[in-house]
Length: 106
Image 1 (cartoon, rainbow, N blue to C red):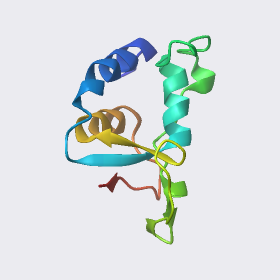
Image 2 (cartoon, rainbow, N blue to C red):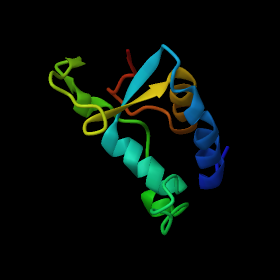
Image 3 (cartoon, rainbow, N blue to C red):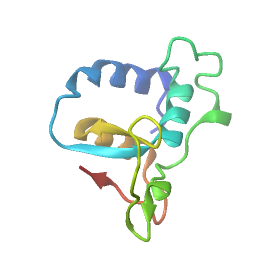
């Protein structure tokens, strides 16, 4: 099923209020920022929203790992973002996960 950029943006705008949930997943900030540009998540960055050229591929968390373990000294909002389990599951169902990448539960 093809999803529109607006559909995914609207889902996450609504879900931002669930950030207090306990189970969260790390997502590499580069992938997350590309997704935000694609869906026009930030009001100041909507010029290319919905264009296939910036559509993110499968989720890729490889950069957060070192030999299969979480890298040391990672910084929230610089290296990764924390997502509630509901948001992680939605992104995973929409985009999948790249080969050799993993979900990182915290």
